[in-house]
Length: 184
Image 1 (cartoon, rainbow, N blue to C red):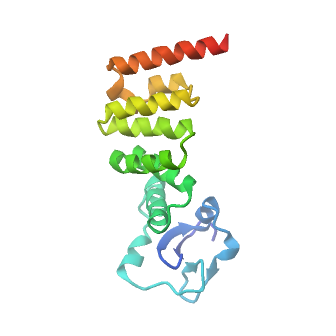
Image 2: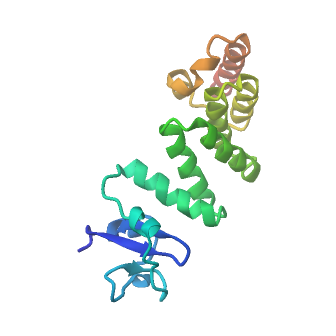
Image 3: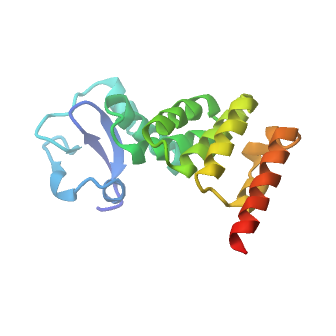
């Protein structure tokens, strides 16, 4: 039973999920109860029987597609969870939806102004949407805040639009030299 797909009704949204998925997304199994319609619910409310709810119960999605839909539904109702914003931005970027990933990365940068990984991801989204000047600024901020995975920077295809820019090359040269001096 734990791997069988079930519908989850949150009161506002109907989502397809497995009980294993519920555990992965920190939904306490004790909060899930089976009602008379064989639909799992998170409350005592009855799920709406409409076409939209039925379409949410899809077994043809990959894990990433399911996660994007799941987190997207959560964010439609509340964007208070920074971890959900981070995960959704990552999933959207991986799927090639760089405009939407950029939107979420900007929100994360506002919310987490001292997080170097947030600014690195923002630089990647800006780069992939053609905003190369802003991408250089965000990458500079990430490096200033302590991001120092230069091997990842060199391999990350999201930064390819920046590689031939003198400002990108100078930024990396200067930061790598600074980083080498700190190691000595």
